[in-house]
Image (tube, rainbow, N blue to C red; front, side):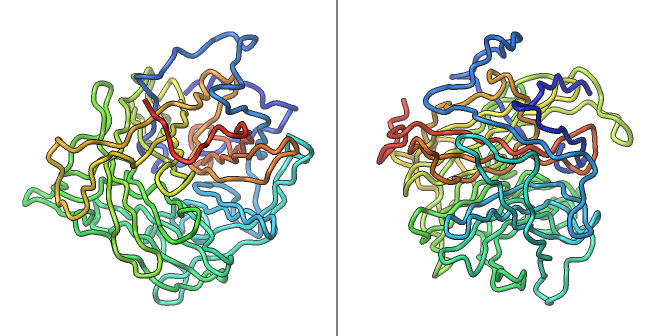
Amino acid sequence: MPRHRQRAPRGRAVLGTLTTAALLGSQALTHAYAAEPDPEPARAQRTQHGLTLLDTLAVPAGTTEFGMPFGGLSGIDYDPESGEYAVISDDRSENGKARFYTLRLPLDGAAFAGDEPTPDGLTVLADTTGEPFTAKAVDPEAIRWTPGGESLLWTSEGASNSGQPAFVRETFASGAYLRELPLPTAYTPVKSASGTLAAGVRNNQALEGLTLSPDGDKVVTITENALVQDGPAASLTAKSPSRVLVTDRRTARTEAEYVYEVDPISDAPTAPLPPPVNTYAADRGVSEILAVNETDHLVVERSFASGVGFAIRLYWTSTLGATDVSGKDALSGTEKPMRKKLLYDFTLSGTDADNVEGMAWGPTLPDGSRSLVLVSDDNFGFNGGVTKFHLLSVRSGLLGTHATCP
């Protein structure tokens, strides 16, 4: 599939890696605020709506760390006290053990200081048995430090087609299992008599996004696309009503739940995926969520079409005024969704963002602005994917107390 890559700023090395399962998940582009990509690099819009793309660091193809492939990076979080990032791999214990890395991305002013991240460690995630996950028993996607940094929360998409549920778990920093936060029954995969999914999270379109409220009291997750019973997956003509679940971190009780509408797929496929897939594919969905305050969030929508590539957009969204749908087994379609506004469109930036799946607040920049760090999932070599870290600045004062989405 042609990738139409732009060389990363400052001559970063480019990696080549990607996995079929992650590639065939939901990804996204917008309609109400969308603009056509500018084909002329000289007109690249690196600053949009107060966000500026400062630098991109790409990891060399085939990189290994601590004896396992350094790839499949699907979630990232930053600990300001230690200066370390936790980065989770979506390896289903097939290329290595299910795991997360701790690493550093030192800055030199408003750019990455080096050509590669500096890994500090690899931690194997343990199942409830205390042993590492067996092959295909888990699909890690998102990760966040808890306050104090002694434990981490992380999600698995599961595998709905085989009856494997998605989950949110807390693990000690050692990787040992601590507990699981229950999901509403509406998320449980249910099959019809014919064997098709009738309810619950869609296969490979489940808990891609996870964040904590700024005070650490609330755990917020988002599904990549709609639950089966709630509506369609995103298509070239249809939006998809994803669910945003707010859970009390201490009691593990559901506090609220909202609808976030994923925009339609941006492009139709123009060529099939390479072997062994050999099919035309296109999808769109939410790949990450990040809290701004108790009501407002940043969301990554990721769109993909074989033969075209990825289109990554960042949105500002708010629960203010949205219908609380907690306790509903199925949506009626009359619910008021969360408001949203496009903040950044990578297709206009002059940089190929690749398969962005993780996003975190980074360190404060020299000019006092906040930084955002995004990571792309290389999917372990499928179709020429690249592990990239993107550094953005957020203009001071842009993120107010509450969103004012139109």
